Length: 137
Image (cartoon, rainbow, N blue to C red; front, side):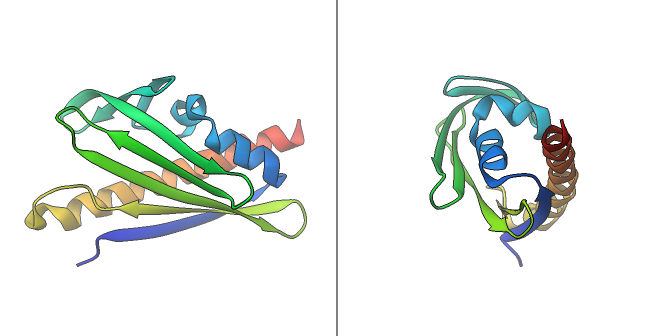
């Protein structure tokens, strides 16, 4: 049984622009469906069980291209989302996202991860649209 999935997209935009956009927590609601709002180190997420207020910390290194989000949920559960922006030829980047399985009982895990992958794929396409449009303006 898989406990993670990796997805990537190619974006036609300069590295610095892509990195700064993704690393800015306030941009999450523009491309990540679950995020309703982000203010400082707090975010409001829409989850299958309803809305949740979470703690949010971003660890980003433009030098290494890494952008990781540490999320603390009510009750103290924690999750990390990890990603990387990699330079590619011709003013392009490759954005890679590692999706870890949610903390669920084993019998629920496979279906939940599959559903999250579908959502992630839509979100990555939205991200590409946002950044490609920005690059052309």
